[in-house]
Image (cartoon, rainbow over all chains, first blue to last red; front, side, top):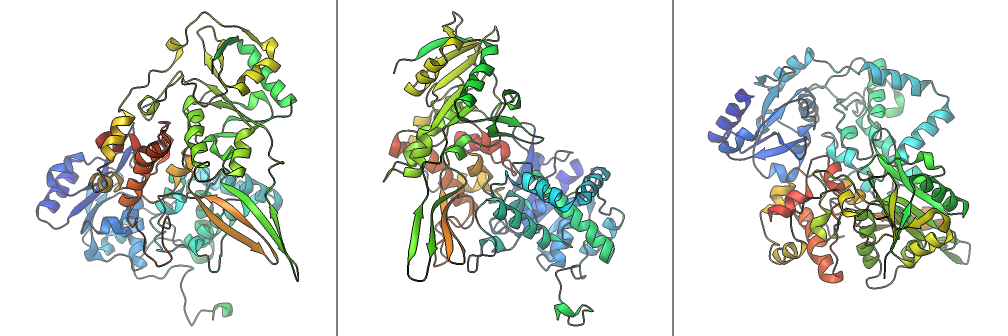
Length: 266
Length: 335
């Protein structure tokens, strides 16, 4: 921890970065994202198992970009998001300093996005067995039962869009759901509106989602929307091979190639 | 109005519940789920949980549904028929298990929907709601009702307020005409007022600030770094507004299916980037800081200026659910 604090301090002192995005003490027993601009404030940084918010979400927010070049405290889920953002041309290496945090809570400095990729080779996305079992159970349901399951789960959704807001990959300046000419997705949070919203979100994240669970953690209603993205991850793996964020590679699904072997796309 | 005090036995609560159902009322009460406790329609007393501080969602959706049809239309070759939303199909609803903060929230909410003109749909629903609240015996670090003129045993807004006594039985305070009527039709369940005092059975909620002082300070605080500082982590979602029992901003949406369609009133939030976005593309509240300022000023300055009651009841729901841990109490106490 001390290593991280010292590094953050020196980055601010040398003006290499103008802001450090990290975790600090929150209300009650929570931690929260903090934005440090002065070296003397860096002692507020902490890292432990409560630090689950995916900080990469702030890298594309204009209020944060406005603060200057950032250094970001990056445990594995954040590292994955950074690579995926880079793969989608949302980040350049020169845009930020990555303060990696290993599973043992040790500071890892990365020279390049390539170095992050090498590190993540040994820390691949793995869907937890308990989720696999739940997904298998849902997939085994007859269609009507599965539909009823999701209708019941999605009923409490009031479309606060915390799932979207917390997701580092939901950076579109104008989301599909905000398009009203034509209105693709009903804005209302009735059952159809909720269903279409969550299906659309999952589909847009297929082949991009890095399984950080920020959407589920953010949902005030505790709706298991991460089961949708996890299931998409499994599907991507089954049809296209294992997914891992990688700079320079095209996204599994949301890419266009004139030589695609599928004729419908051309 | 004079409050009437009674005693109701623990065992009689279920009888009261059954009588309400028997009399054709729809009852909403706190129901426990894996990751949430929601006000939901319940048919049996056993479905209700009493192990909650406050529910995750607010009870406001009973009077202000998250999506409400205002009217629908049908077009034929030559005519367009407009069908107003029916006020007759709205059932009588008993809100069972609201907290004093939840009940108090109906006061500013009703003010809002009766500002420039009385909102027929809201007033119809509100008129059919009975508020049967339960005092708070516990609180947490997010609770601050006593700072906004409320309290763990505050009667304002409730029809009947139940306070659990050391014996396990309840003090029942019938506050409004509606509450007294409910007592009258269930007279056999209500006994003479208990001797035990109410106060020692209530949570000790710390008072952090004085609403009048905050209101005075906010008069000259439009330009202040506190708004950006306290909202820096804001992700721009609407969870704070949607769990808030007082927030009432809405958006109008039209949905059409061929020659038929309807106009809907849907919840909106000042946290959203689309909030107050002009057709020109200009938004007077362009950053989360400006949106956070709007939220605080609306609740603690504009609303009490206009209707004498703050737009915050100190339930703490917004701070509990915020995915970025933005804490309303922290902002208000730092100004």
